Image (spheres, rainbow, N blue to C red):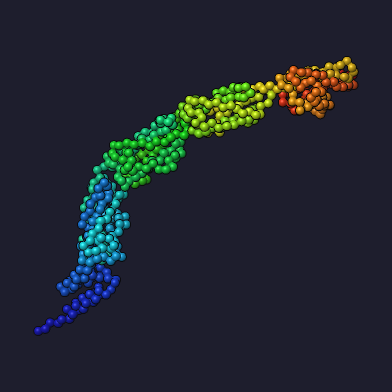
Amino acid sequence: MFKSNKPYIAIIAVLVIALSYSFNSNSFQGSFITSSCDLTGQELIDACEGIKDGLPDLVITEVNPVEGNEFYDYEVVVENQGNGDMESSESTTFKTYIEGVDVGHTGFVYLNGTDGIGTAGGNDQYLIDLSGSTSGLTEETLEICINTTQIMESDTTNNCYSGFLNEVPGTPDIIIMDIAPYVDSTGNHNFEIFLTNQGDGDIPSHQSSDVQVSVDGVTITTEPLYISNSSDFASAGSTGSYTFQITEGGNHDVNACIRTTSTLNESDYTNNCYEENLDIPTADLVVSSIIEDGTDFVATFSNGGANSMSTSVNVIATLDGVEAYSFIITPLDMDSGESYEKKLKLDSIVPGLQDLEVCIDTDSEVYEEDESNNCYITSIFTPGPDLKIGGVTNSGIKGDYEIEILNVGLEEVDSSISPELTIYLDTMKAPFDSFGIVSGSLDIFTPGSSDIFHTKLDFEKERSIRICIDDTDLVAESDEMNNCYETIIPAS
């Protein structure tokens, strides 16, 4: 008796279609194999195994910690244990789980068909960095899987590796112990920031941070001070320091903080800042003296402070409040405890008494412990002619008066100048009369000389008069305040 063969015919037909599709279609997918090979029948199973024989099979054979950073970096060895090659355009990634939690950033490590695993029997190594994914404080479970949704394999049951992360022996704790001033071998004043790792672990190579430093609220670290496993204080129990030169003395609040928003894992983030008030020695610039040297004047300056000048400073000399001379003193000219002399070129000196004032650091470029002693003022007297009226007397002739004019100064009057004799009546501002006196007309041009000038003062009633010589200051005199003489002229 013959049994119906229709079921076997159907199975064979499905198998023929599957085989035909696998050999002729470029868009074959692993899901098609699974759905086809789920069918029963030994013939179909054998046929599916034939299809799988031509596929790769990626297997993780080893996961080894990387020496030197064995707590976070792992080398993953993958073999192609299948009978087929990967297409050169094929690529997949890892999926990594720590304590069952997907740390997806390892998906950026690619397994490519052009790698060693692209050929059947081949292998390759891949580096997975788990920094930032593991706490490193306790032993944690690790599972690394090949993402099978992106490639076609003959076996998708052997794509994962399970084990444990290496336990990190300790965690660093970087603190700032002290901020202290000191003077270096060249005499510069500095402050030093001391740091230590008081934790029970070293700084790992993949972790870093930096120190931010401010003085009186202003950040002075324009470039970060990096903290890494190459720092002096990277190892547990070790110390190190950073140094800053002080450009301005005085009292300052210095603050230093280890940045907490970084990749550095510490056991304690509450001790990352330190503040210190520093009293930094300062310069003290002084104008010590001004002495007369013949026709010149020499100013002496000194730095009586414990610190050098941080920059060059301006010096200004004035005569009666008007700038007469200026120059620069550099830090090389005058260091701490040193003095400096400078001859003043005072071209605007005139005969008579003048106030000479010399001031250093007029722009306040250097911070000083005493800003009140930067100036020195003295009065200087320069000899010159000095014209004055000696008196007014009647000559014995009605209306004729003799005016005595003297040069009581120590210098002669420049012969090219003709000083004026001016007569004012009562309270009138306009001159009643004036006369130009030229050299040779009266003997008043040489020092110590005197002469008489005759003029007519004939009035019907008594008048008050004021007589002045060189009222317009054509002659530079040693005393400009004694040029006038006042008297009463009786009625004729």
